Amino acid sequence: MEGDIYSGMGNGTQVDGKVLQTFQKSFGQVQNILDQNRLLINEINQNQESKVPDNLTRNVGLIRELNNNIRRVVNLYGDLSTSFSKSVDASSEGESGGTTKSDGKGGQKRIRSG
Image (cartoon, rainbow, N blue to C red; front, side):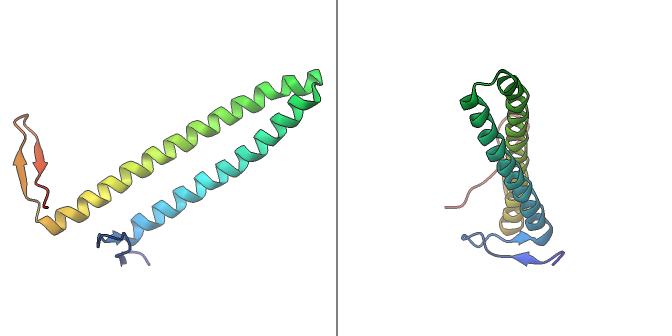
């Protein structure tokens, strides 16, 4: 699978096998965190309904853990977005031959076809 090229993006864009493996791994991590969050939320709700002081105190730590997990998911999605953009840019560079124009700020912009 390594080094294979996949053309399953719907618009003919090809995706390298390594990129696909990275996406699958990241989405797996996100799903595991979301599953853990579901369990945390259920426990938090049960503790809240019980109104037992020790359970309510425990919720403080559970909510902190939930917030940290949410941060991790946001970071993973940010990393996925960056990786996806880079892979699409690299793929379209190959298709367009790297045609660029100056943006007047010392940088380059790709010319969009269409």
